[in-house]
Image (cartoon, rainbow, N blue to C red; front, top):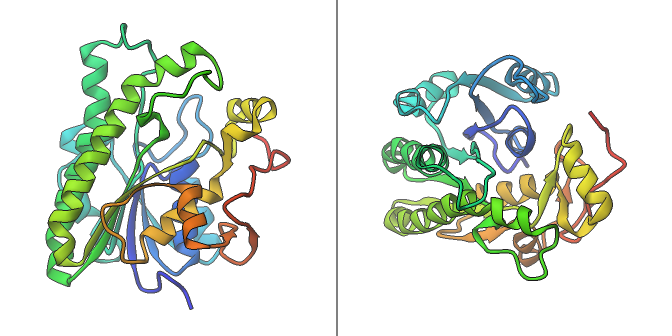
Length: 284
């Protein structure tokens, strides 16, 4: 039995990384997935395209469509959920994964850079959630998952990497902390409508195809990295069960649920919450 059979999902930031993994895992469980990114074709210095991501899922027997929108632009966000519904129908699931950062010391991040991060990382997911809620209420339920980050917490001393690395994630982490708080409030407001809103963060840095800098970190500190399948499996759990107002982490959630970790095709069990990232996987 497919866990998301006949469900329709919108996943933002879906051309690569965590977003692509979540979209692939959802499609493997029977969902029709609308995949959103800021552009359809190649992006300078970034591997993978939205066009390729959609084609990969469809070629594997899934059902996916593309929608292009720069979510840092309020005008581009306007009416996006309605546009997404044109592909397969009204949304059952919204996954707000798209995000961006300006990695600078907190004393140096400009107001313009802070505003850009808050608009993309906080306002965009809230805007899309507000667009999705009316139809979900009318249909009697739905799921909204906002992807957060462990950077909401100041790293413990001694820092696992370097002092600079610990400091430059501060502004980004502040946006994700704001998203967590807003998501909890919104979750409890709409819980009686059958809408499940939660936030999910990776326990560590996620190892994805093409992320060679993460592979370098993993070779030095394997405890700082987790497989991308961990986030995809945890997202599936939060978008198929009745949980409300959770601010949770990938490994912790799978461990608490006693849930096995599956490959993105949903066919093979590859481990559990303790499974390390596979450093022998394909490189870019």
